[in-house]
Length: 92
Image (tube, rainbow, N blue to C red; front, side):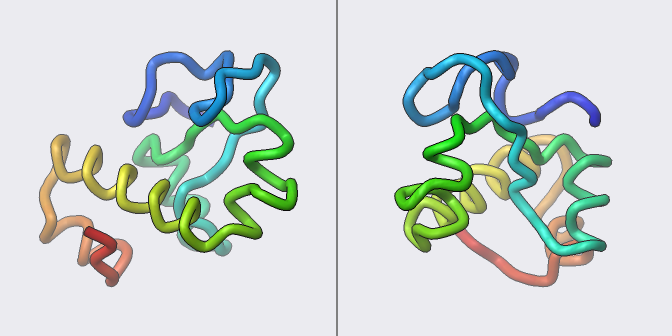
């Protein structure tokens, strides 16, 4: 897995700062997961914020917030046009 364009610190949860996080692909699904790896759209999340009851896979608001952050950072490096070409949906 490549480097994140969202954070430089992959050693702690992006939400709460707990150590030993799992890596979350901000855009998921088979094709999008590969693009997330390619473009650095990954963030560190603790088990609770990744797979737990309040985590990104259970909480729509957290999922949307992470996607908005990912799109914002992507657009700083590339463009909205490139985002739309690759992901086809605007989250901002």
